[in-house]
Image 1: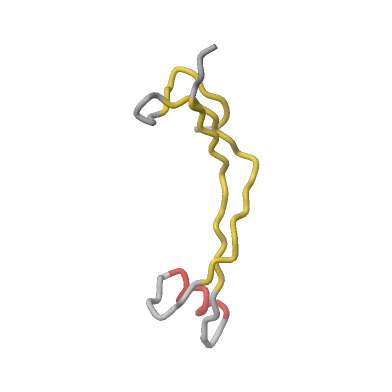
Image 2: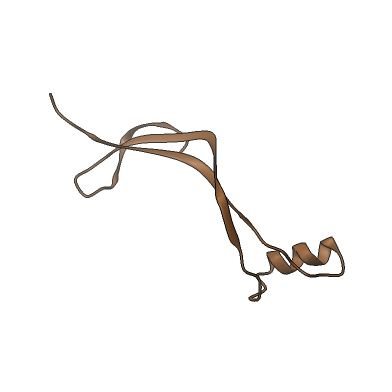
Length: 72
């Protein structure tokens, strides 16, 4: 029986937190969003959600587009 290499990709968010000194919460969010270089982020973990893509891979590790399931 043949064997196939299958990729299952599940969508996820990687959560980070930081503390920001600012005069308001809006300013704090803006500083964080704009990538202030003084901000040090701490990874909090990965949160998965139910959007999946399952597809076979060829010998070079590329997706075989002729058949897949889920969102790509």
